[in-house]
Image 1 (cartoon, protein in one colour):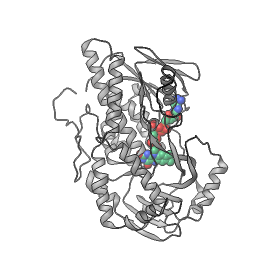
Image 2 (cartoon, protein in one colour):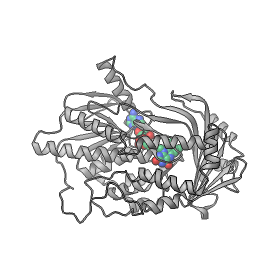
Image 3 (cartoon, rainbow, N blue to C red):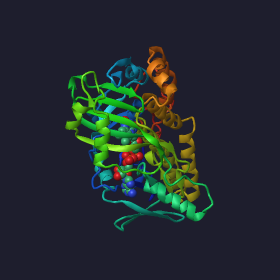
Image 4 (tube, protein in one colour):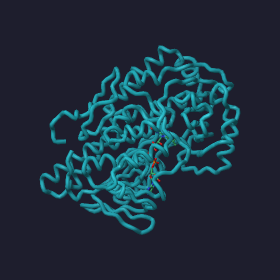
Length: 455
Ligand SMILES: Cc1cc2nc3c(=O)[nH]c(=O)nc-3n(C[C@H](O)[C@H](O)[C@H](O)COP(=O)(O)OP(=O)(O)OC[C@H]3O[C@@H](n4cnc5c(N)ncnc54)[C@H](O)[C@@H]3O)c2cc1C
């Protein structure tokens, strides 16, 4: 690894999990950056969890945080499927198959805990580049720079701006305006580019069965479904409810809406012995949101590029949204580092606007191609949600009767999921010994620490 030592600087908008991953990646690439986060603190507890899959654990290893992160998580090991009246209709081996194939099972984290560990894992000089209470309000670009203006009037200049500002991305909104100002006739994504067919009430509570940590459950019924994961200290549930009609507009729910949805699920089981109504009085945090789905068509404009939920969104059933945001950061950082280093070596002072445009297009094309799992992950996540909520008779038959056959599950994990997982990329400039070793090899191996190359 070596520093690029150029004045090239990335402004990252958003200090969520994907923005923090970008901070790790750019720091390791020797590229200067600044994070602008609108919240008053990076670590905020809303009660949600994040499932992290083995391909993301590899990247955590490259960030140097794997051993700090893992003790905060619970490796999933067993899964049961129920109907709403408490009948257990399937027992699944899916997590053990993932472990056998890729060297580690999926790990459930309390989201706030994971973000805290990602933040703490940054060196002090990188932490100093994270500014809070900085809400992006405007973006201007010139031929050789980009300026972010915040709601408090402060301005920050950089070479590029990385929009990691989530599902309602202001960066995405602003590049849309810039693109349409330049050419009002051009085609661009809609103001609200995602569509929700389901809403999701998520939350956590003290674990009702600490000894059974690592258990996953799903509960299926017509138009309503639940996912529940049990950890040693907390349990996390996800209550899915079909909306009366698909909607693209942003909806802000009230506390009363939260209570109403919870009461509709009160009699639903979470486990063989615990119902939603048993844990609801002891919630440690909960939120209600629309479960947006989609991939935007335009991921960049001039010196601005999007990552994470800002450019794609999937339902949470397979726990793949954050994992895909990590892949965005990896693919973008690998390319960015090469272009910045080449510009530094040529003495040009930084990549040209044209080079950046080409780089951003290449990044999007790769993420959208079959080289990556993104498009398939959006589809499969939506499919899983619809199957569990018995969206129509075909989903019902598939979910309740066909997919419970052990042989079909094993085929699905090995021939559908594993080929997608193994496509995941790693930072090509951070050598590490591979720790995620299973039956199935990774397409992109880690650079070995034994190699004597200049990374
Ligand atoms: C309940 C729930 C459970 C989930 N479970 C999983 C899971 O198990 N596994 C998984 O892979 N994915 C999961 N996901 C999806 C995952 O949470 C997202 O994919 C991930 O958080 C995306 O990260 P992000 O950093 O792109 O966006 P966000 O997490 O939304 O972070 C965006 C950040 O940008 C900041 N921001 C927004 N606007 C501005 C602005 N104008 N100026 C400055 N800062 C701004 C926000 O404050 C925030 O900190 C889940 C999602 C939900 C809702």
